[in-house]
Image (tube, rainbow over all chains, first blue to last red; front, top):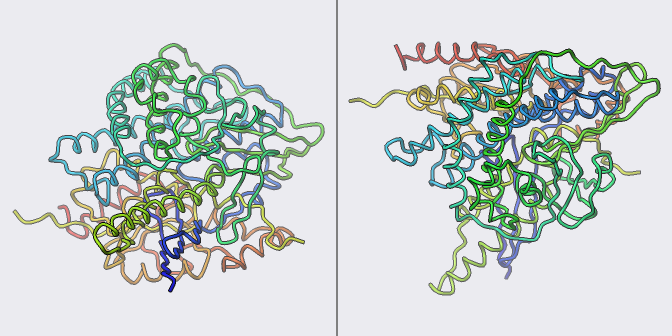
Amino acid sequence: MHNICEIDLKSVTKIEGDAALHLEIEDDKVKDVKFQVTESKRFFTQAMRGKPVIGLPQLLARICGTCSNAHIMASIEACEKALNVKATEQTKLLRALTMYALMIRDHALHLYLFVMPDFFGKDSFLELDENDEAQHQLLHDAFEIKAAGNFLAQIIAGRSIHATSPTIGGFLHFPSEQDLKEAVVKLEKIRPAVLRLIDVMKNSSFSLEGDTNFVALETPRFNFLEGDIISTVGERITEAQYREHLERVVIPYSQALGFKYDGQPYMVGALARLNLIKDKLHKNTKKDAASALELFPSKNVFHNNLAQAIEILHSVDDALEILKNTKISPEPIVKFEMPKTDTVGVGVIEAPRGILYHRVHVGTDGKVIDGELVIPTGQNQIILEKNIGKLVEKCLAATALAGSRSGGKKMDKDKITFEIEKLIRAYDPCMSCATHFLKVKWTEK
Amino acid sequence: MSEQKKLRVGWFTFTCCEDSTILMTELMNDHWQDWKKYIDFRHARVLKTKNVLDDLDVAFVEGAIASEEQAKKLREIREKSKKLVAIGSCAVLGMPSAQRNNFDEKTMQEIQPILDKFKQYPKVKKLSEVVKVDIDVPGCPMDPKLFLSVVDSALREFKIIE
């Protein structure tokens, strides 16, 4: 008789957006894993057509609440490449600061509010015990780090969500000297808290190892903005070539689309970046996170959390470097003209969750003809499913071993479900992003 | 000392980019100590795993309604909540999540198979087209000051604070 078991996880919690999981186990083997993105699509790929290109970055920001500023940066880059706009050196630094602010608050949200409760066996981060010294410290650290990132985003980009200042050709608003001084104070103040966070993540015993092809942008200053694309096994390619290496995979049960890179499942995000370009981190980060950095390159998927913590430190360190050594003053937006013939631009950046690709095709009237977006969560979906299967088999093997010792065997569904949720959270998936870029025809002719 | 009475709150998200959810977690930076003391998050998927949908004082609902499944859930939330607050532009106005309502015929044909496959409504709806909404907090993301004042009024109205 076959021993068949099905687990349905209707709503994965403490992630950005909504996802479900269906799992079938037969005779202690995983027969089927379906990670379903259950959010409704909002069709930005279609909605962008016919829109004036100057308004495009603000429209595409609305794909995602948490990484809206990454979408703005990728869209601006795509539009500037299409319109042949060259950003000034100051603009490049302000964009780097925008990315650092995003990484600080977005990674901190993920690590403290989503991941940390699992470390303490709590249901919610707010349930951490204020009377316990270590937990009390973490509660305060969390909100102080997030607030510093939020503040940096507000003074540089206008807002931390759907930023109002960055635009094609430059920035619309500039921070005052007082703002900049205050940012330095806040960032210096959170640095010890970030080091504590790195320690907590480093000491985690969560582990799932496997060979994975990692793909990341090799940004010279680790500023998440521009560079060639490199991978664990593949050749170096330019941003514009990226799409040619991707294969779209329709996942029939999911509202999101999966991708393969050179025919293989792959992973993007903080772990990929640390595995491939940790030598580009700020010197102070390298010094103070030295023992944590020795763990990279790492095959342990859960080290994505540690990698994010290290990226917060780098973002603090390089933001401080820029703020202390640059005079930021108002400057006009670089002027540009609409193209003489229709033209295509590609923008590739590192969003918090990995490589984000925007392509835009602009007509001579300055309106968008069409475009395409490739989102980190879609890129990680295939490898995530594969690893969920692997994790469950690991749990089943451990149960079988314990059962053979005690004479009985009982699979603990709740325990397995908890382990799966932990793994999904380690990938830090973003369902809003994953569901709003689709360009699929379901009936192939 | 008697136990502090808390406001029973649910935070729900439908079709949107969840910017107001993220903004709420940013507002926590300054208000988490008060919220920990005065608010019982009965249901908030972004904050916790063990969510229950039982009697609520206030339901904050973000996003537009794109399917009957979502409408059914929203009606259940309405039944169980004394107050229902629409949070952000998509909940209040439907837009930008309802942008497909304005697509031309050719674009509609392109997306129709997806709408059919996932049983999506032909038109995306704002919350007030499905249930009675008591308070609107518009904005993309929601207006943070207005949101905080709604929280404050609710704490007073339900006699959590004086």
